[in-house]
Length: 264
Image 1 (tube, rainbow, N blue to C red):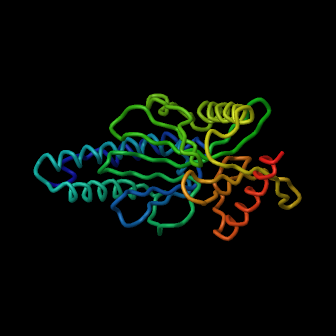
Image 2 (cartoon, rainbow, N blue to C red):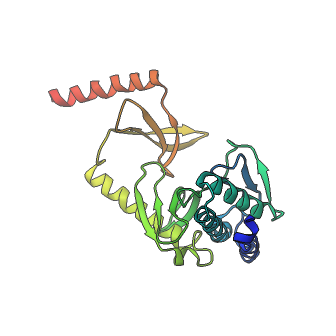
Image 3 (cartoon, helix red, strand yellow):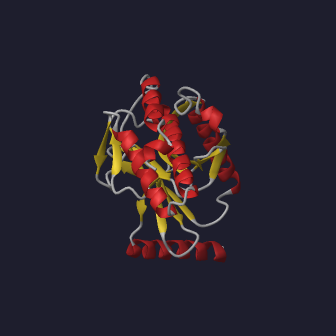
């Protein structure tokens, strides 16, 4: 049994979806199919308003193919590999896609895990709400087979909202209503944090001057160990981690301040 005999429509689904989404903003994007050795790269069609729906449909066809191969007696690991290769070949039929090395930064990244049946998207959204303009990253995670997708804060790992697949199929939803709702939720969370403080863990906030502009920075301690994340306070975006020797100095400062408050 050939892969083409099992599911012939994935390439047509992808091509039709990309063609119908060309009016969106575009942008570069990378697709990782777990088990496939290289990342598939698109210079122009990486934006989720263009790529999310056709990729989901093509991944669904490939996942269905994997399940059918396994049900016909194919070893599951081999079925995953064959369906992943089939999905990659469908993507590469589009002139906008090419192969790229792993590790290259992308504005929009997609991870397809056929064995687990999941699609994971990491993208940047832009919105204007109540005269506040913000550009921020979100993660979108859900089952390829269908159902609601979770929109998550990539720094905290918290779920911002759950969105039904039908809504994500609406034209330009990522750049319009979804982005605005995420920003409103982020603003509500910030208001709550200012009132109640962080729910758990330690956090240090300060401003740094970069090229003449003051930028809010958060140092957020992980729940376990002495590792501190450096977060861009404007976008709630992870920037890096403090080196161990810097974390040791920071612990000295926070301990000193804590003792001052204890003695007060």
